[in-house]
Every structure is written in structure tokens, then in C-alpha cells.
Image (cartoon, rainbow over all chains, first blue to last red; front, side, top):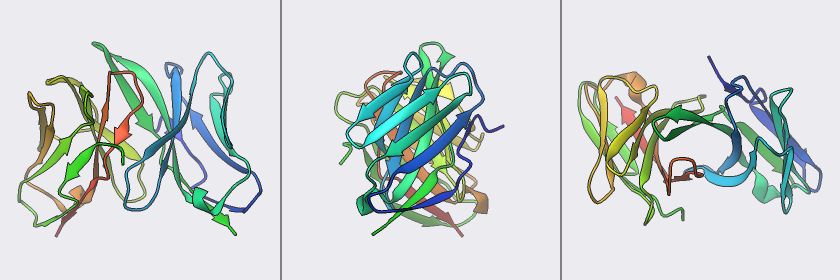
Length: 115
Length: 112
């Protein structure tokens, strides 16, 4: 059972336009959400996060929105640049007991920004 | 550079064999995590260690085991390898259990 879902395997956007990547989750115990970016032959790198007590977090061109009632979050990139072309993973954190937290990842969305 | 070092970068072996993947966390990080990424799959959590102790287990097979040493580096041991074990294995580290993870560049395992 996939608890974090990224239903779009790929997305193509023109340079300068907005990229919107979506993520849905099923576990109501998730209380912290993160987005990671991954280039080929590299490990995922942290991009931006949001706590469940907020509905928006902004960092430069990147904004993450959280809709707890819909169990949905989205990552907006404005304006999109060719260097943003990568695979984006949505991840959700929950407490798993004994002082441990577990990060559950979606399958990723491959973003292609076309010059 | 995330500061997390994984070796080797690539590993090619045969079915039935045993391999060891190594991870050195960022300086000061006490938590180490192992993830597996198969084709068309997301990052599947395998296991977590904190300061030498196992803290959480995910979808880790019984043929797989891991440990974290006193110097905080970690090793993931994969035995009786099968074709389906071919994947990218990532190590990640964090300062504490509920902080964001920093990933290494991964070990690409190919089982032939």
C-alpha cells in the first residue's frame, strides 16, 4: 500500500512558466513533508519542507503548499529553469516509535523544463 | 557534495553471492538510513541506525543485514543475491531522528 503517491511520472514545462508537482498521502500521522530533487547519477538532495501546522512555505522560486484536509501537497517552481530538470520526490515523515522517525517517499515525478 | 560517502559506486556480481556496501555519514550525524531504489520504484526504506543501535526497520529482506560501527560508518550486507536485488542503494544521514536526510550518491548494484 503506497502511502505517498505522485501520480504523474513525468511533467514537461516551458522555461519561464510555472511547474506544479503534486503529491497525495494517505497516512494522517504524517506531520512533516519534504521535497527532494534528484539528478542522474547523484543522490537526492533536500529542496524544501513544510510542517503540518503550516499551509505554505516559500524559498526563492520554490513554494510548497499543504492541504491537510485533502491530504495533498504541491510544489510550485516559478519561473522554471532548464536546470530544474530532474526527478522530484515527495516525502512524508511520521513517528515510528522508540524515538525513531520514518521518511516515506513517493515514486517521483520527472520534470523536464524545455528551453 | 552532501558529505555522505558511499562505496563502491558500482558493483557487479552474480546470483548467490554476498556483497557489502559501505557508508560514511556526514561529520556529526548520528543517524544512518539505507534506502533501495529499484526501476520505476520510489525510495524504499530498508533500515535505520542511531548511534550504533538499530532504530527502525522497513522493507528489508532477511537476506539483508546492516550495522553501524562505533565510528558511525555503516555497512549493508546483501547475501544470497537474486536478480531482483539489482537496484540503486542509497545511504543517508541526519543529525537526529527527525531532521532532514542528506543522501550519498548511491551504489548501483547489478546482479547477473
